Image (cartoon, rainbow, N blue to C red; front, side, top):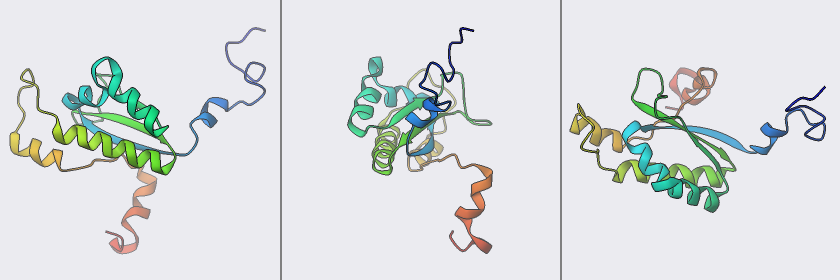
Length: 138
């Protein structure tokens, strides 16, 4: 039997692809119009930060947005220092990016407030730990 993937092809480790993504994972939301600044012309900006940090970075497709928002998801995986470096890079790109002229219906005060905010995707089963008992951590 000829399978494209399987234990015979990857040395017997069924989870080899997942293991390559060692470390932690964080998901950051990015306004759809700023994703191009994060990626860079021809992918150069994202390629450079990947090489510098050693992190794996994936940006959701242009037409794939976080539910009920106009934000794209940037998934970052790697060691803690790499995550910190990439999140700082993404936030800097969001802060300094100008809204393109073809983008309509952007409230400038809301956009300015968005630039000062870092939005993370947190699984619902982890929110309790972040908030703490009776809101002790917030």
